[in-house]
Amino acid sequence: MIKLQVLYGQPSDHSEFDIYFFEHHLPLAMRSLKRAETLEMQRDQGHLQGDRAPYYLTADVWLALRQDMMARSGEPRG
Image 1 (cartoon, rainbow, N blue to C red):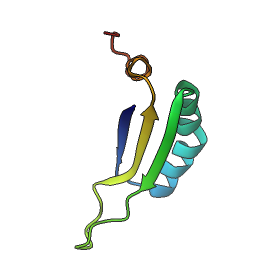
Image 2: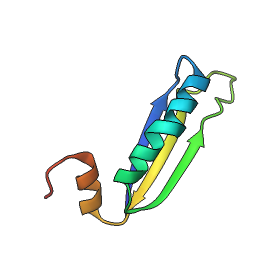
Image 3: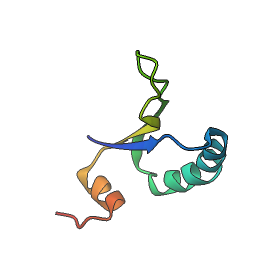
């Protein structure tokens, strides 16, 4: 099992980011990740000290085979 983690930084406009991400980006990503075993998404809420989190959204994609990971990353298989 391979885990691909995607980190999305803090956008200047959260509402605009959410609309674009959920209406455009995520549907496109899901088409190319058909063989993903699991997709976990989390919106980061901030630090204990009250500071803004460095990432607005994180996504963990679990792929069963290394070949799936290589195909998704555009790297040559090997």
